[in-house]
Amino acid sequence: MDTKRLILIAGLGLAAVVVFTQAKKLGTPPPVAPVKAAAPIIQKVEYVKVLVAAQNLPLGSRLSEAAFEWKQWPAEAVSPAFISNDLRPNADAELLNSIVRSPIVVGEPINEGKLVKSGESGVMAALLKPGMRAVTTRISVDTAAGGFIQPGDRVDLILTQAVQRNLNNTNQTGNQRVYIFRYYF
Image: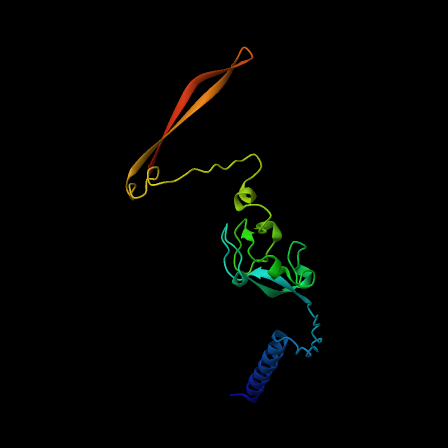
């Protein structure tokens, strides 16, 4: 081989190595200087003790000492309806023997709107909505169906209702409607 050709091949090889290394440098990003982490801002959260249910309290249950407990609650999340230790430190003793008007689940803050205090009014009066009535009936061995209705039995209930019609501006009792309901136990 000719020396000129050897020099030319060596020069081309050297140029190829230089081009390859420069292309590799262009593909990699420059090193990033480490950023100093700012000190985390820690805010102190203030807590208030709130009266919460320690167990599930179904409708009509009576509150005992085991039914509720004081629990830490973030002060900014305390609703005016909650019972806090700051405003009513003896609330647990005051609410003892109160009756639950609507169900309260474990951990739920106790709200006086969901309770009926003992001596205020009966549970039934607290549970009835305006315009509703409750009627009591005597149950005895003769009137009860205890033991006669078993699972799988059919029971027919009959409802008779008198319908009033307004004929010529006079209230006259019209036909009676009869409804029959069938229940399966």
